[in-house]
Amino acid sequence: MARNNGKDRGDKEQELIEKLVTIRRVAKVVKGGRRFSFSAVVVVGDGKGRVGFATGKAREVPDAVTKATQAARKNMMRIPLREGRTLHHDAKGSAGAGKVILRSAPAGTGIIAGGPMRAVFEALGVHDVVSKSQGTNNPLNMVRATLAALQSILSPRQVAFKRNKRVADIIGRREDGGEVAHV
Image (cartoon, rainbow, N blue to C red; front, side, top):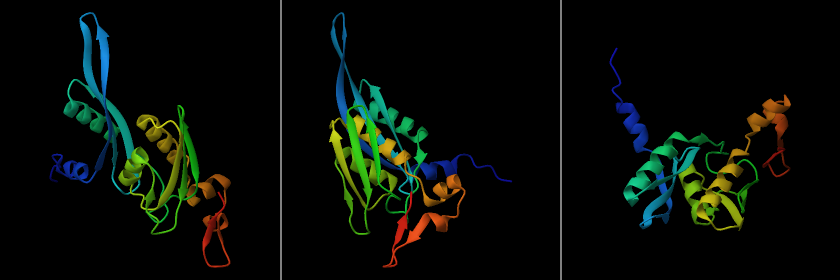
């Protein structure tokens, strides 16, 4: 039996999508004046339903981005997607003063979202979504609110399991042949 030697793991890391959301210069006031460092917010995803984010702080920008990227890879979570391109249902999320509303969209709509939210959707692999941010425009709180909303999304299979029903009972059929999820 041959050993892996970590080669497959390196391939997995190569296929991750890394999005740098924001870099801020922060100062710590000390006896001799101010010490400047940089804070970075990074979103990492595989484009197939897994996404994570983290912040990193260091004296230099590349070090801050590297720290944030490594932490984001550890904090990845799975989000259920419909047909691998959009959300199963609408969702709301909040973090701090930031509130976001996410709506599923038909094929061909594209990503209609602001900067930090767009980075999350691109890393997650969502192709069609409409979103609105309310309250703050702080990138970190917008990313946190977006992920809070995404965590509240349930697939029809999860809803059916919770209600002890079949998936067919959860997904109704419309007269025009489309599907309606009763979530």
